[in-house]
Length: 239
Image (cartoon, rainbow, N blue to C red; front, side):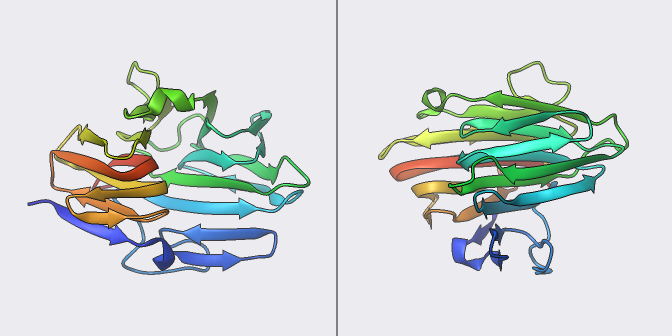
């Protein structure tokens, strides 16, 4: 029998810094819950809203795979590798911090907030050369199917590459439709996060920003009670 954990949207940690409203699925910064430190290799899932003209100043990271998904607005990224560009909705950015990288993230617009998901995944190889990639993933290409956003670095597919045996998918499941995902390994789990909409997984109802982790299973079927925007993280359960 599969194992599951349900995380309601309003159970997440919350921080309001004025310029930043953040919701933390897992322990982060001033929010700590010993039962919610990580889900397998996924260490961070932050849902951030950054006010116009503000952002995160230059700060360092090392030995972490960092993935940014912009949901609304535009985020301006700059880093010590020389990259400087905006990330827009339907774009995904990956950054392998490796031996060390510094970056800043600012709202690209002065008059509109930006909403982003930032995900941190533990790497399976330490002290690699830092790397960066970014790509547009067309919304029409994920209707009632899984759109691969991120995949392991040695895989020859369309996913942006990270140093971990992990996959990230996004899908828009239309009302009354279902989508199934076959896990790559019995050692993996799947964390399902509802960006918008209402779905159910084997009777567990998930609304906007709710999430469920499932492991010790071969496959997961997501049923849409209304048209829903969903992101899926398949990660090793041991790190």
